[in-house]
Length: 239
Ligand SMILES: Nc1ncnc2c1ncn2[C@@H]1O[C@H](COP(=O)(O)OP(=O)(O)O)[C@@H](O)[C@H]1O
Ligand SMILES: [Mg+2]
Image (cartoon, rainbow, N blue to C red; front, side):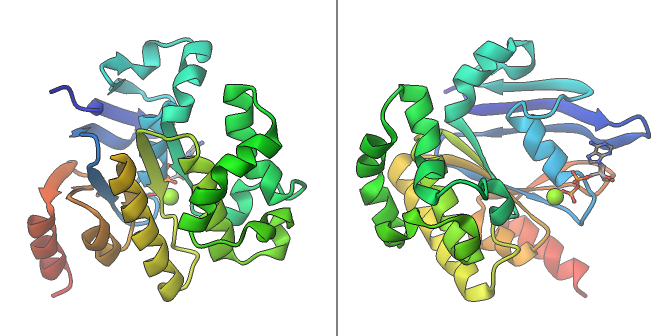
């Protein structure tokens, strides 16, 4: 069976040597792959390359067998709903001038050319699933907590029924208890929809909680490990 995402020999530099080099791995439907590395190791850059938000210096990314970097802007835009990214700073991902109900309904209203009020009604089960009250959606982002905004972001992203989510440290700005709740929600939604996820973090415990396999970006050689191998790697690091 063809993997959902095939990453082949990716390298990236901004003119001062490679940030990452010769990165290859695959992601199947429903699978969660971790990308682990210290700050500045290139995790966010790689995450953006995986969905064509950033160009690579060499290599290929195939989404359902299609090389993203050979596509025109228009064709890439058509694929966008299937590949979504959840960012680290939820408050920066939502337009501060828009009420949440307008932000979360915008993508579906745009892609399906539907009225936002109709889309919002369809999103009520998803809103309940992430544990938010629907009346919160008449608020602006600055009236909500970070955890509430990240849940609203999840409504926005999952409304598009993506096949792949790149989650770039989505909980690193949230406190531990909210973090655990968001992980639980992500796992449930992933399972329900068979969504694949590339989960980015500098926190080994987050990797172990969320991922089936983990790729390590440490400026040397990109290595993909099973969760068991990663647990041993972390144990050695912390001695
Ligand atoms: N647009 C850019 N132009 C030049 N250098 C960049 C750009 N984006 C990221 N970098 C550099 O690439 C490296 C990796 O950054 P990043 O992918 O954000 O790492 P991480 O997410 O692991 O912290 C850093 O040294 C950063 O300064
Ligand atoms: Mg980053």
